Amino acid sequence: MQGKHTDAVATERVGFIIITHNHQTKQDGSTHVKRLIAFLILAAVPVLLTAVDWIEILRVHAAPGDLPARIDGQGERAGMVLVSAGSFVMGGNDNPDQMPIRRRWLPVFWIDCMEVTAAEFDAFLRQQDAPPPGPPLWTEAGLRPELGEHPAYPVTWEQADAYCRARGKRLPTEAEWEKAARGPGGLAYPWGDGFDTNRVNDRAATVGLPVKSQPVGAFPEGGSVYGALDMAGNIREWVADPYEPDAYKEHRFTLPVPWIDRLHVLRGGSFMSSPDKLTTFNRSHSDLDATNADQGFRCAAGR
Image (cartoon, rainbow, N blue to C red; front, side, top):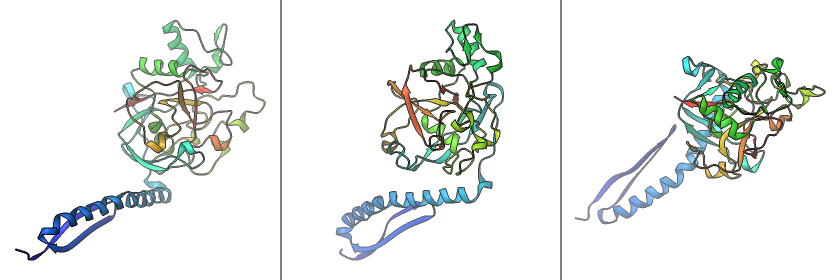
């Protein structure tokens, strides 16, 4: 029978947008029409997702009261803050290796509220019978006691990785670090979109000082929406990921990190950095066994 009928071919809901297409066709041609409409819907979805993502970005920026409350860890998670599951804005437009800006979803995880201190790292090195990093925090006589609450530096990636593993934790992935620093809405700095020299230990704050670092947590007003401190300035922080210039473009962020390469990513900028290098999306990198003067770390853990 060649009668006409109505077919509800596809309904796709993306955020606030519902796409519905009905058509009338002869029964013999319905399969081809369905395939064509399904193809058109799939082609439209990325555009719609992008539009909804930008709506969410504007919503979060317009309603700071909706940002997540700080949750501090207890017991084995003491000294850590919770980063809730959900999507966040990742990437920036300052350099090609930060592009494109997009939303990605991460499961819940914990991250250290502050960078690992020199005193904590010194105790680990003593347990391992390993030599200390050296100046400015260490001398031949050992760690300078007055600098024990400064972040541990200079530290290699391998040392940072070993420390976190010995504590039953791990280095954060690059995506985890970025979400913990900028929150779900894509802030340019942990505290907001405008630079504030009073919230960060940067290059301008350290002119003429013999020791450039500051004790961890010295800038509480510079914390992120999740309560992570010093995510901008003081020292750059190692993350688990090897450096790839096109990682954001290819969307390559996984756990566990599938390979070890010579170059690894550092995030957050340091006491040597200018404001443009202190953004939550700025990426730098170094050889995994390099001991540059501003390299430190913090640890992360799953639920």
